[in-house]
Length: 80
Image (cartoon, rainbow, N blue to C red; front, side):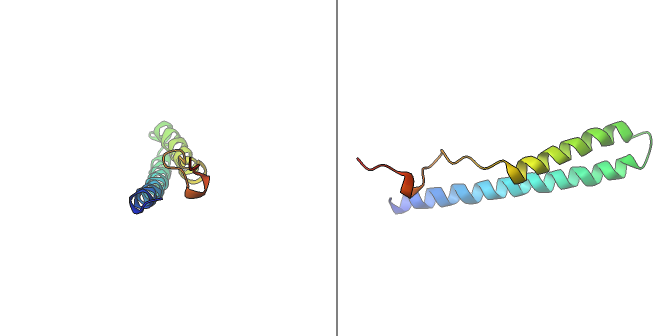
């Protein structure tokens, strides 16, 4: 594996980590906003939607693995 391929793989891993972290932070912000909206009875329907969306985003960001088929790992690569 060349240095360029290793650098590309490392950049994609870091980008995936940053993306998943951003999704988790967005989900937490949605949950906090839903909690604030749920205090008033008028905004309760919107709070239920925002809270569910926040929970789904947190779950997706923490438990759905990143794509690994973009760049194969060096040990899984077949050399002809």
